[in-house]
Length: 167
Image (cartoon, rainbow, N blue to C red; front, top):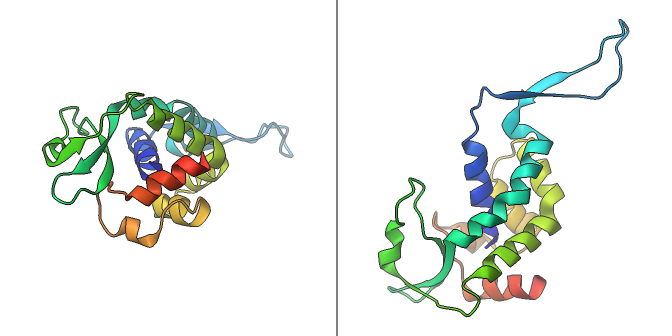
């Protein structure tokens, strides 16, 4: 769940035109009496990243819990591919039907964002490398190194239970 949330944030930030900039700064004056402002990329703006975080969990309505047919491993899967079509992974999984129609995924996402918002904003503003790994393993401690051996979003049963217990 944590990795899916970070992936959605990264995808939203990647949609921003790198040339778009925003003026930031304080309202202090320099020696000549001019207000000091600087321009930064919009994708590195604390305010813009915070706005993305406020709405990112709405995207969890496109996610479902599923198990891979090949090995029974639990996963959280986006129903839609990045291009907007049906996710090709859908043929490889069995969707887990649950009573809340996967609304708990949004709830978990909101808990993650609420608890780690400051760390998320800080890492995205600084354009850190391996943000997903840093947040998931080092800061939140909701993942371990084996969760990052593959490029897909597979997770094991203990991740779901750990998140459920935490949130």
